[in-house]
Structure formats: C-alpha cells, structure tokens
Image 1 (cartoon, helix red, strand yellow):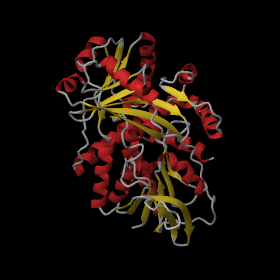
Image 2 (cartoon, helix red, strand yellow):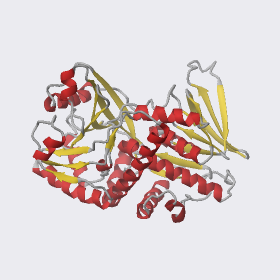
Image 3 (cartoon, one colour):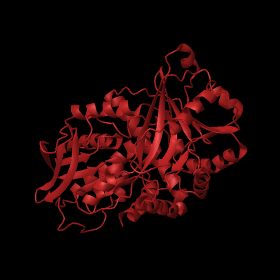
Image 4 (cartoon, one colour):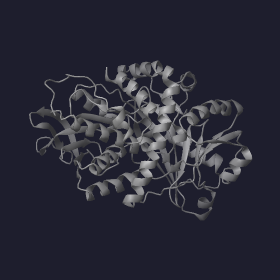
Length: 458
C-alpha cells in the first residue's frame, strides 16, 4: 500500500493516521514537538459538543465584538495592531455571514457523525480519557440571550441534534451544583466531555501498535516532489545549533497537512491557499484536592452563553474551564488579565471550589473565515488537507479523518500518478457522492462542504 506522511500530531493528525491505518496504508506522522498533542490538543475545554456547532459568522457576533474591543476581560479581544492577514481574514469572515445557516446545519451533522466514530475508536482501542457521557447544559441568564438561543436551536435540530429546552427548575435538577440564577437553557444528552490530550496520546499509541511511525522533534521546512513521490525534509528540533543540526528526510507517496495554525504556511509551500488564522483560547484546570471542592464542582458539562465559557469535569479531581477568543497573531503568551475572568467565573458560580491550585493554559485555534474545516485535496495530486477546525477540532476530528481517508482511497482508485506535470496544474479534486455514502456522512452536508471548500481553493 502507499506510504502517506501526515504533518501534525494533534487530534486531527492522529485521527487521520488511525483512519488510514484501518485502510491498510503505511503511515508516518511528523511533529515538531517531543510528544503528540502538545499544542491546541493539550488543554482545551474538553467538550465533544454538537450543541456548540453554531458558526460565528453573524451580524450579532460582529456587534458584540465591536462592543468588547476596549475590554481586556471581554470574551472576544482583538489586537488592533495592523496586520494584512488578520484584517483580510476578518473581511472574508464577514463575507460568509450569508452562509451562516447552512454552515451551522452542516457542522451539526459532522459533529453528530464524529461522535459515533470517536466513541467506537475509544472502545475498540481501550483508551482511557476521562470520558463523561452526561450531556451538555447550555445556560442563559436573560431573556434576550435565551430567545436568540431558540433560533440557534432550530438550526441545530435541522442538523439532526436532539437538544431540548429546559426551565430554571430543570437546570437545577440536571446540575444541582449550579446555584446561580438562570433564565433558561437547553440540554443535549448525547453530548460528552473528555480529556483531549489523554485521548490523542492514547490513540497515537494505538496507531503505533498498528504499525504507524511517529517522528517527533521534526520541524519540517521543505516539501519537494520528484518522480518517486514527495520528499519531506527537516532539521531535528532537538539540535538547537543550526551548524550541527542533523538533517533528515522522508519519502512518501502522499501527504496530509494536519498542522493546525501552521497549515497556511505548509499550504503555501504546496501552491495552495488555506487561510487559517490563529485565534487564541484560554483555559484553567482547577485541582479539586479537597472533598469540599470535589462536591461543589459540577459533573455535567456547562456552556455559559453570556460569558462564552465552557466547563468539563475531567475525572474526580480536575475541573476544566475554558473560553475567550483573542485575535493576536501567533502570540502564545498566557495573559493574567485573560485568565482572571475564568477564575472569577468559577468563584462566582461555584464559591465553595478552592481555586488556589489552578493551571493556566493558552492555545491557538486554527480558524477558517467560514468556520468550516478544510477537508480536501490540494492542487498537486497526492496532497490533502484536514485542518482549520477552529474551536471544534476535538468535536469534528473523527469524522473529517474518515472523509480525508476516503478522499485518499478515491485518489488511489483513479490510478493517478502521485505527481502532476507542474505545480499548480489541475483543479481541486472532490470525492464522488457515491464514495461519500460509503462512510455514512449526510450527502446534503457534503454538498455544502464542497461549495465552501471550492471558495477556499482560490
């Protein structure tokens, strides 16, 4: 079988590796870190949330962003420093407002499909990752927010999600630890939570057992093509002295870019355009050492609409709280003024939780302007992308891995040589409707995704 190289050992790269191994491919995964899942897949909010599938492309989001611009503790923050990439990305984001409805419905369908694959993988490979299948409770604190949520709920239901309206009394029954007043909410029993880092590392181990090779501390800097396939080159990241760095090279028949916020760079090397922008998110992990804290922490996952904060209970002694969106380029600083609102939120809603031991974290989400993942072939035959999942990488990855693996199967079925006559020749290859049905993804969902990705190619 062909040898496929995957750049990126986060959740999308590792799920892609697993999907290809199941189909019999030889797989090598390259990552610049010492271990898998060390960037965006390290400490996210933990939610496997079809109920959070609403895309952000709406006039309401734009208005909120403008109101929040001068607040350092706002859920959305933008560094006003001029940047062509940032402002052109925002322009494209605004341009996709007209696709808000269709993209939200499609994302919902993908999320529902992804859960089935992920739960099946976890059971098959016996991966322990603090999975809790207690559902997600979405809460609103005022009438205006709740009524806006009703409109979103209609779209999620059109995508096939069973998400029911709940009253304040029902909210207290579902999660007794939440004592602050709520106007109303929605409960999605089929949603779940888990530790993305534990899952990704566990799945990477499963891939190794199935024959995959993981090359860590590989900071890939060249991708060349020849008559015999792709040649991928890098200096070993452990060698800080460039004069003595060991040069390494790998040859593969095909390549999949799953590189998160670095995907735009790799796409440019391959004569493609993948307009990923890094949107920073923050989280805190509260250590629940005392029995009082463990009893006071919620066990059902929460999504506070007004604060744009999500929570997950990770085992008995960890409480993950995450939120915020910061447009600040590739800045990875963990800012105290962005962490403090998360701590304050815990203290306000769960005052009996001891927050003296809190681990802060920040990660860069790979966001596309239309909020949809890029799952497609590149201009050069043998190049594929599975990236740009934004804040839903954990939620969508198991489905998009199946999609890109099917695309690679179809490419091989076409008996196409791995190399095109010249860089940039040809158009985006799209898998057929019949092939898509074989992986049980909704056809209408795929049709919309195809139109979106055509726009991203140019």
